[in-house]
Amino acid sequence: MLEKNVSMIIATNNQHKLNEIRKMLPLSFTLETLKEAGVNFELPETSGSIEGNALQKARTVYLETGKTTLADDSGLLVEALGNQPGVDSAIYAGLPRSDQKNVDKLLAELDGADNRKASFVTVLALIMDGQEFLFEGRVNGQITEGLSGNGGFGYDPVFMPDGYDCTFAVMSDDEKNAISHRANAVAKLKEFFDKQ
Ligand code: ITT
Image 1 (cartoon, rainbow, N blue to C red):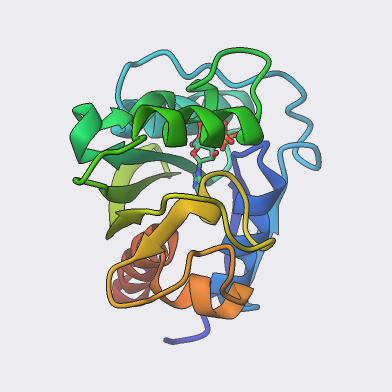
Image 2: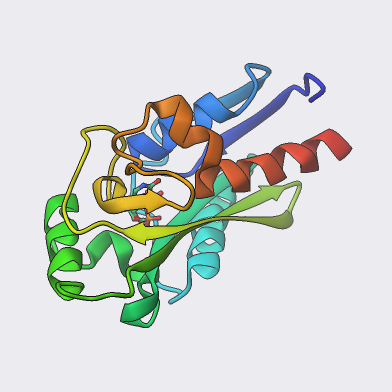
């Protein structure tokens, strides 16, 4: 892509997401964290949908700062569970949030299930000059029967993308970042900036 000089706030409190997005964007993009932008409060996520929450987080930060803002809302959709945990992925096993408890609950819910199909979805919401844009990325796969791997975060140790025989947590960062839901959404974001 062309070396666009884009400056934006990444509206996330999740360090893993931030690291992944940083690696996916060209160095000509200047990314500011919420802390650096002086946004020190919890961002509301009450819309009930992944897309709605991405917009809600981006709008909150844009209203506060007036600066170009990118928010990421993501979730794991498990077919046999009626697409749960979905928008509730971060708090699937309740509060306080715990990746370990979420994964344990998911494996317990799917105990003995034949249908282990799942998709990761990311919606990126960009607000720039008062205009809103959405970019969705998805990756399909299966929930494994046990945990494997130490990389990644969240549900990565139990998610095996289609066409691979290991979980995201076994892959290197670069391997995950080449095919993930977030990578697909960021690719659309990059295309958008290419056309600007
Ligand atoms: P922000 O809202 O501050 O961005 P968050 O962690 O609360 O961070 P979400 O509301 O989007 O993020 O919650 C999504 C949850 O889904 C998150 O807690 C992870 O456990 C999980 N998740 C998202 N992306 C993931 C990925 O790439 N690999 C594994 N799990 C992921």
